[in-house]
Image (cartoon, rainbow over all chains, first blue to last red; front, side, top):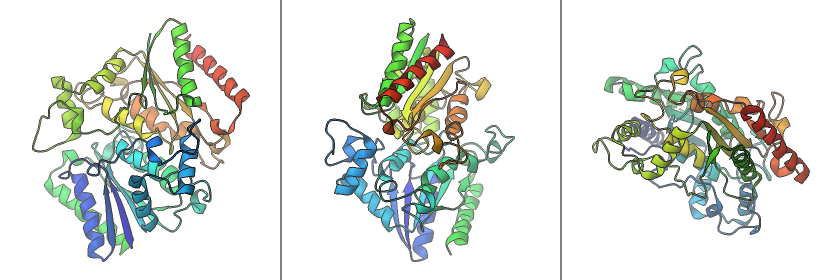
Length: 215
Length: 215
């Protein structure tokens, strides 16, 4: 299989980065191909805009989605985006690996979604939504670290909602919408407040998760 | 009152930009002060990272939230962020004005949230959550345009959920968390598929919304 990890943490020494490496190591040991889009290391620009396109279809009135469709039809996305799109086309599994910031992905990963999952390429044009989505047959999941402890993410906790509920926009409105089968999240809670033994256990748990879903 | 509009659309001729101007015009006519953070025009960098800080507290192990707290305590955020923070402190009303991209704000606005609502400044440290939040007493709302028509955003529609439900992470997990009283969204649906008469009606409806909540 081809595995595409999109990783969004600036510090290579972070626990979040350790999770990305854990997945890469697991899949490579199993004989799979892994690509790692390390957005901070790659200095990925998350701002969707005119600079996404080698040429514009309409110089008079700029509309992002229309230009995305035109770029898809005329092969005129900039190389930075074409590279990510090609990795995605080849992938059997897509992993978003990130720290939860404001109940959401960090902006650098939101920008990957905005720019790479372009209209015409990932949805719209020839492609439908959900079970008619372009990436039907592929799997995806979120590997997420949180600052807050697990008990915050319960109906009676500080946040009043489960992490799975908080991430529903990404499960359903992003990955599901373009056809991915979305597996359960792998969540590492409160990672800034725990010690090495707990962190080692989480990495083992992640290996167990990967074996369960991909062995 | 002081009104802070954070606007996230690249095209000044877009309907989304017309909504931002409508709010600015309304509030100024009523004698209020309006600041417009036009993120695309300002080339706002949405990537939260080491470049947010004039100096780092810990050169050995970089942790974003810890550096945010340190920067708050030592007045060492970069000028780009200090400016936005000052506008926010002075604001009575905060408006996020944006097109819905992937059930969420565009990355450039997500980055404003990530970087400006810094740990120590907007929450954590001396400040609690929700009704103990730093911005208690201030109001906020979302002014959002969508590509999909209104009927997509119903329990039986394509997206299976209301727009208000989709935006709950921002209402509750961003604005509410730091203490804002969150007013109902103003939503303009399917704006790329409608004509001038419908657009004019929406702008009038927005004026009515503003009168209702702020007259």
